[in-house]
Image (cartoon, rainbow, N blue to C red; front, side, top):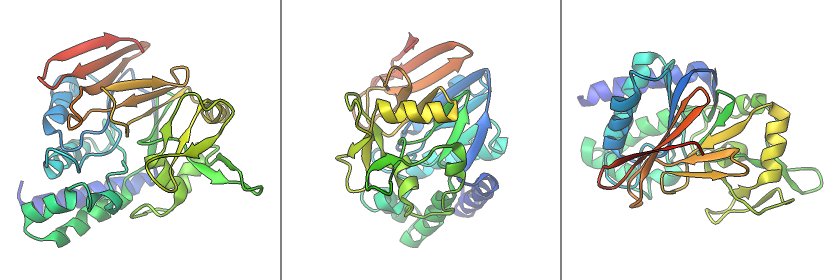
Length: 289
């Protein structure tokens, strides 16, 4: 695809994102696959489409399409967006990750990749603009789908408490938001679940200032208030998958830069399969959680 065609794709994609805003929508489907961080792993993205596109009702991408290695962020993002535009975001759902942001792109390779491939670093502004319009969340089959996790806020007593109490709170976030600068939005992209926090709500995350770990108390509160049954997210470089908090939080990681397996989560009604793609491209399927 030529340069002008890519720019046209970015604009078409942005127009679709703008129709939805910060929250992509609520979906119910029989067959769904969830793809976590790909970070330029174009062969994993293509495998997901080759294997599942004609067999499922929804494909949900949980963010982080660029940066890291291999330096195929442009091609990876392009491939996904083309499929999203073809379906008008009715079959291919694309959420924002923390690497769809200048906060990471200047340090983890995407800006340099754009400069090399387009011969002009200023072209990155077009990608940055697109990223600012990407939605933060969707609800699919009763699961909140986000890149990172649940956010915190400071209450009147100075305590950290759950930052969103309903899906409407996500819909009200600042939009568009480049970095994002809104602390709730940023934590949705950056926060991580952790076992063992017991009665604690949020504790500081090693990712940096303004990011937190959240545990069972926060997850149970959010699910109770919203009537949802769990959270499906990406963000952490695990060996394909990790399941936390009484199986209520599922992490899917679909990249290969970390030297472990890439994971794809497949749900067919009540059936759940974890597909693991090893570094040597061997594919394993594991049932259940």
